[in-house]
Length: 171
Image (cartoon, rainbow, N blue to C red; front, side):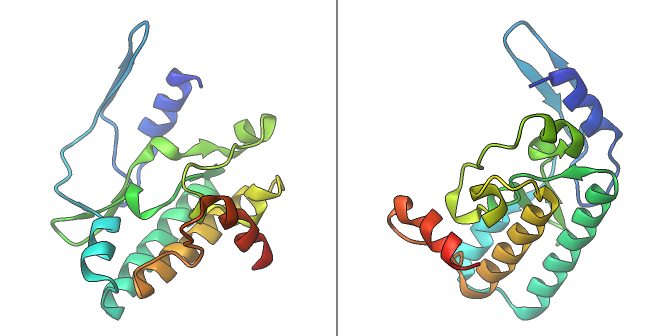
């Protein structure tokens, strides 16, 4: 993990649905990012509180995420870990996502991306080590839309060891 190149990557991005990093610096054992205050809650909080969101909000959030992914992909950047925990709904009603999980596509191809932390969001491409990393972002968007509609991810199972099998069978 190269903190300087990651910090520069994040600082150079400019999109209304991405939280900007004003300043970053690192010490011998830590990295610090200074970001503007973003009032709001995580999308996961809204999904858990309301179970299923109103259709108009789902369409609005999905379209916003689509625009963000399109911007990132045009710049050869992928999200890797787009989940409701990484998406904030601001006081103004617009989404903002944290930039810490984005990566340059060509850097990831050197070492294939490891699986993301939350198994229920893993795409079949990630599980089978195929290099369609942009496709994995679109998969995550579909999972998020499903979760906004039904209140749980489509591959939610209490037994984490069976989630991968369930996702792979869905192809």
